[in-house]
Image: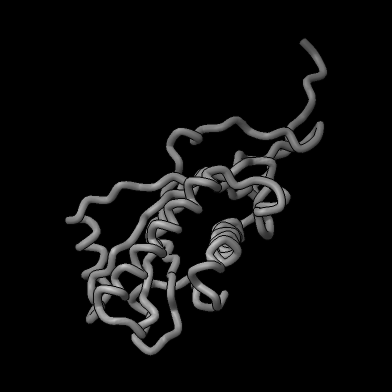
Length: 188
């Protein structure tokens, strides 16, 4: 199962997936980063940012049963989370404005293709504590209205609005550390 590092491990998994699959468009692996668009400066060599903007409990997997650890102990069920990410592309800055915009759009198109082709993350792709987890992770594009996207970008002061793709990764399980001792039933 996954421990408290599961959120960070999902980020590592996504970054490695993007770095491996985008070598044709983004040649430097370090140009794909996990950072808020508000942290990226114009002189940074960033071509793609992955930003975790929201963490919500998955209501469909709430209220699971206690898990039996052994004959005398049960463990509280894990919490299931939905992680919402925004992926933003940045141009290399060497072409004219139309070429830069086309380059950003190619990167966004490639992101959508990668997320679609890898909609279920399982096995050796998963990093850290996720690799020990028997649950698959699902990636889905998340529609966000222009109004909501604009509101999000206003939280990054002095940063121009950039086209972005949003997705959700679910279910991300974090195990509970809470155990309860139980006694065996000895009479009817």
